[in-house]
Image (cartoon, rainbow, N blue to C red; front, side):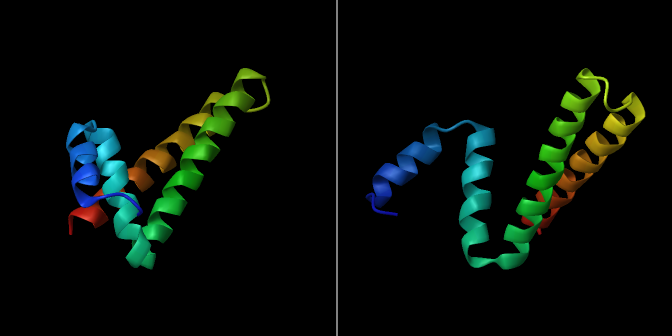
Length: 86
């Protein structure tokens, strides 16, 4: 990565849980395509949920559509976390 190992370790130790999990996911995905693929699917669903919320704010999507897309994103995130634990 271009930095000494000690610097990387100290940065990881100082990071919040959310940042730490993100770093671990990204590092694991470098050598594991299925993990990378799940990360990208989850990210896509999160972006879809954000887009639906914006459409709802502008009156172009109803609340049920927003709820459905948000639930799909949350489900994908849980599945991704479970796959990292196994």
